[in-house]
Image (tube, rainbow, N blue to C red):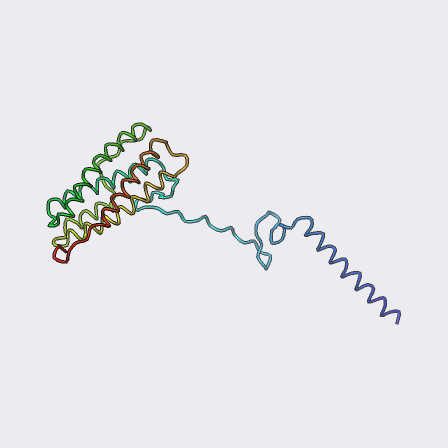
Length: 214
């Protein structure tokens, strides 16, 4: 009988000591659970877990970061390419289109984006950036070539391209207008262009080609 009491007492004491030790560890450093000695994460088997890779960043077809933190020079290059695409594609449509509605929109694009190009040059010079060149990104060059080869589908393809181009331009100018740490003149230019491009998008929404014109 005494032997049974002794075993029970020893067992009770051992379990209590283990519980107190566990509580003491949690109280000292709750964040230490699942951590190795060097602070890295530890899996269930005790092996270190490698850190997660950095998130993927969105880039354009030149590999340029298209996040809001893109460099001012990248914004100027993208905006200039968009202006050139609008001008050249709209001039092509003015020569070949059969729709007065489409031609009216194309005239507005040529005039507005010619003005935008001149303003962008002045702003770039104001903030000591390289003046935008009269060149286009590969994406815009490809779209222009597709338009040249459109044939009887010219008007419909032009409107489709314009809707996509204006959606991209809205994202581009909105990103610059709200980006932190950008030169103030560029931010003001972007806000003004955002308003103008949104107006162009509304004009596009009002253009519907009749079946005979498609």
